[in-house]
Length: 217
Image (tube, rainbow, N blue to C red; front, side):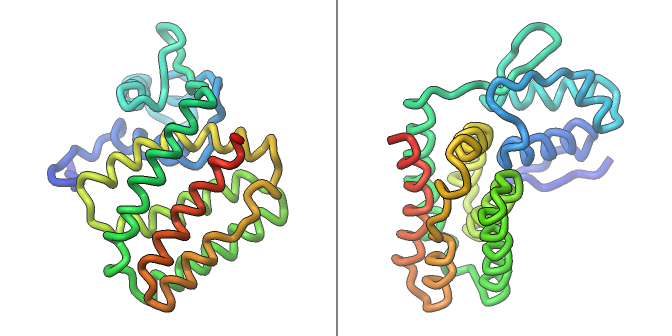
């Protein structure tokens, strides 16, 4: 059995851990909406596994606060209150600004090109009103930056926040439409990176997160 590095330790590369990683990504990207019921059987069928790894992966997500039990067989995506979602965004702004500061020295020209390419696709998604494509691009854009920080403390915390953020942001963005997320703070991020402006870079990340906060006002 292969082992995969995670943080400072190792975790076995099993069907359950692979499924957990995939479901984590889908939650962060808004593939599930608040209130969605997720059955163990449905997940097992969708991914071609037995019930055991599906149950283990979903229970793991429950312990992380990304899902909650609905009954003995079904698990639900929690619905965040306005206050709770605002608190998640406040925590994101604090932690992600610092992660960006730590990542900045490690970002290179290849990373800049990748970020600009992702941002181009994000802009096309906004123009088309495609929230699913926007959410996926937004997740990739931010985490390309954050993973360059090499943080073993802040990065796992931010990942947990995104598990709560993704479903609710998808719902809010769908309600308000593409115009609600049209401010191009990602362009400000890439421009600051290209000119070597770390403070401008961090401020643009913070402004991007604040955009979500303004949707709650």
